[in-house]
Image (cartoon, rainbow, N blue to C red; front, side):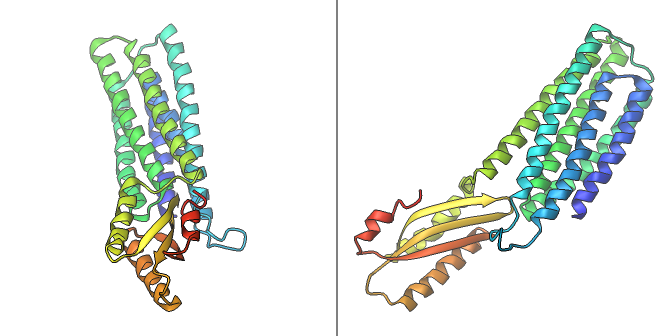
Length: 293
């Protein structure tokens, strides 16, 4: 949870700094940057709420836990990003129609640069934590902050160009480019959240790791079918039917289960494995190998 609080603190600090930069310069580019930081704050608050829900243990109503709550956070943040981009676009078009000079550019750029450095540092921390804990919420927050950093770099470059050339039209043009970049980021977050809520399969790399383990057992004469995977934020699930010779005892089959589950879980940390035993020479096996696929 402390990572979410760190994100909130960074958002509050950067809103203050970027708002001050806008007040000093009157730049619509810096205004767009400040608006995105406001979205960062809302997203960080939502992330904190959803991480709190996701951390709850499994219960009778949610036997698989509450991890999917993280997808709501990244989905909301992506939607807010798109809304912020639309607001920036409107402000930029107005400034194109009615250009205004950028004032105190050096002071404004210095303040905006300080805010960007804060965002960069926090984004690196959140990205590392998101990968370590396999949290889509922290990773989404980190990617959003990095988008904010690159947005700020573009805005700073635009203001610097205005100060050097005197071409005031560069300011709203840069702001429009920022809006397009933000929309791309927001749509990506929403798409990923929807995929998670739709129980998408594990990434290709992890599926290959699972198959590599199963291949070791296939060489020993064990067969598998009806392999299915899905992910729910930090949690991952796999189910598979295991086919063994019909003369095997239940005890022998159970010992095989334990080894398969342990090896697969070792190859993909955090994976919950469910297995189903079948006799390889039973006719039923040929009927249910496509079960619930």
